[in-house]
Image (cartoon, rainbow, N blue to C red; front, side):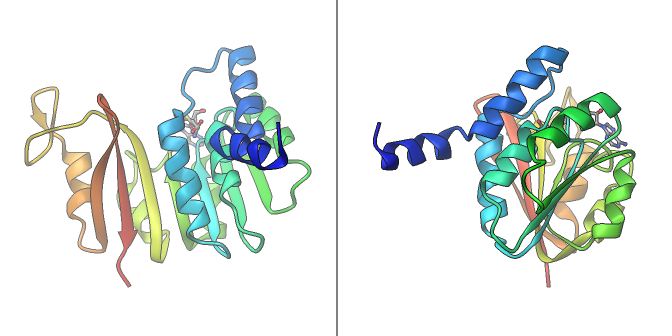
Length: 195
Ligand SMILES: C[S@@+](CC[C@H](N)C(=O)[O-])C[C@H]1O[C@@H](n2cnc3c(N)ncnc32)[C@H](O)[C@@H]1O
């Protein structure tokens, strides 16, 4: 395989993503993000080359690795995970890159690194304190939330009821937000904080 092909293969499936998926399999962790979301994460990180990129809920580091694959030379990435074993194993994947910190503890530990240019809110915050999630974004900062079920209704519905959480993000006055299909049966919310 030529260097160019190797680079293309690495972009399609970064080696650290594969390593993080291996840790997930070893630990029986089944909540890692899917590659379709991962590519969205890489895109967002690449859009903010000098930015502060944050993730709540590291898991085994799959999403972190996708964010890392788009990280610019002047950017930094901080991810927090409350499960000590997951955090320790994920941290090991990025020990060679001083731009990255994987922290053990509650998602609110991220606050000291705010404002965020990219925030993948995936474990803590998304449901329990959505207003705080919005406040932590820098103007122009990108918020990503995955694991929604696509809805053809407005207001969006989930299991027959209005989906108040999705509505909160989609209609928040400080955000421009939309829902994108990641697979035919899953969706992500992508938002940016208005300046
Ligand atoms: C959906 S998984 C994360 C998957 C990961 N972001 C990825 O993309 O591969 C959610 C993770 O958030 C962690 N978590 C849940 N609540 C948390 C909190 N309040 N603070 C920190 N981590 C939390 C869970 O332990 C779990 O590992």
